[in-house]
Image 1 (tube, helix red, strand yellow):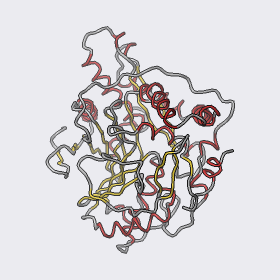
Image 2: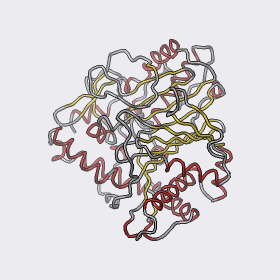
Image 3: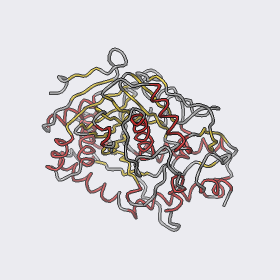
Image 4: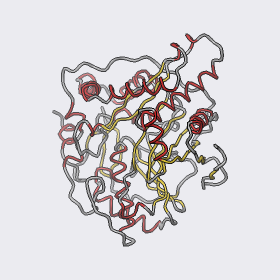
Length: 451
């Protein structure tokens, strides 16, 4: 075992001079560029304007409980690594275009930032640090401290951390290493998927289109199809992709088409117990193959339901966990210098990663805000970063009866988003749509856009 391995296994308290990235985070640093962001965003719309000074005080208080997020990313000879970051972390003004101009590798640079504008609080978190599970615990804890400073206390638990609470060693576990099973066969190989064509918008520009639906109505609709909400929304997304592909290849030989495949993230903590605050998620890859003919919607639902059920099986998940850990620990991989390793990892990701799925669709579930201040939060949204390969991506989250469905896109065309929401409307759901590409930073709502 190397010093990096030993350091990564210890609970982090800010005392170690450096420590290693987890096995899911290793792929991200080589991919970063002006057009590829590893950030994702959680935002809450409050019932009153944000007190920025109070939010800063809450951030200063909460960071003590999350020392493993108070780090900067550094380059080593063979791997990227973390160092403790002692620089102040300030609440910054929000931007019309989220998750842009994110400087990752610089002295004093954090891998997350808290933003505020009028009545909106946002956390932009880098996937190098943690997945959505860890980010949401931090975000809930930040909001809870903000309201506690206003005299509204919350009960702390495993999903809402007390800023004065004790750091648990299990929070800094690289859970992938614990659950790898030497000898397990690798996951089955899959071929390339179809990608949405389209002209890119200018650099540092991203369109965010959000539709808000009644959660109870969406759950009832999913039940009509014998599906969970994740299955139903994934099926709607694949059906919308099929509509786009049909328009791209009208009347042409179906043999010219490619598979339509989604990446649907899975929180591994549900199958492999862990309290880690680092990355511990994988994904399912439900698909349809239009070369076999047109898929009716109920066919898509049945296919997605079956594929997600198989993908969520712990033994199937174990295949990918074991492969990822074993690859990083191979002796010849460890000794490859970082510049060459970066080139190799970018190539591997293009072939075996982004090239194999058409888009990403993540249903986070319920925001899980405590009752003490839940009514003071009007809505919660999650926004994922699109890339030149995955030009449009989707994410879903609910708070109260508001189901928020957000698309992030870096291309000019928006027919995929329009077709997705149109399908929901044709299925009897009422949708309110808004976009950041309206006048000013404040999003402009349109009740009449989809009726």
